Image (cartoon, rainbow, N blue to C red; front, side, top):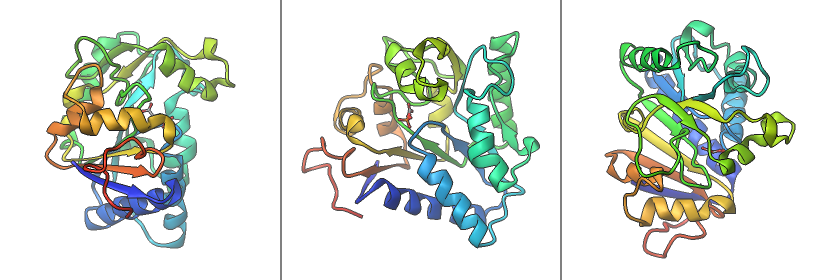
Length: 251
Ligand code: PGA
């Protein structure tokens, strides 16, 4: 894995926005894998700002999001779909036909997971997958445990994960769904390029485990060590736990 450390989360967001926009300029039909959460907000704002200034053509891009809550009605403001519509798809003019998304309201959730896997394959696979990391080391909603799932599946969310998501539900953890659908570990690792982004000191322990610890199902992000072209982008705070050997100089 390559590791880059940036002076601030905004510097990181600008650098990654450049990478994503350059990739779309080179290949307008790029397939992007995208996260929700606090971490990508600065990235999405930087991409939208650059698009308004320049001439990025988003009309042929395809997107697949990592995960979605189970059981929210369509258009619920706490859903990840609503998050993406407001903060990325609508501002960039990305049409619903370009968007792959898990439907957490589907009646048959297993069939929905199979449909999603097939849609990713049909699109030719994910070219660039941007990932956040949970404080518990999850990626997507692949929570730590004795085993991990390979493919898109239903997950029970950890209390810590629900607490971290309460901000999308007016701070009320009781309203955060207890289950979600998520790409599996093999779905994630099949992406041609993976960029994991972590900012803030609360991620420092998970980042250290991911980069310096053993491969373990108890820290799902550690499996990125097996990916041939995974890149990790950190701000200073998220990199603070790294030993001198694995902490690179500031980018
Ligand atoms: P965050 O979530 O960006 O809100 O910290 C990251 C994650 O849980 O994957």
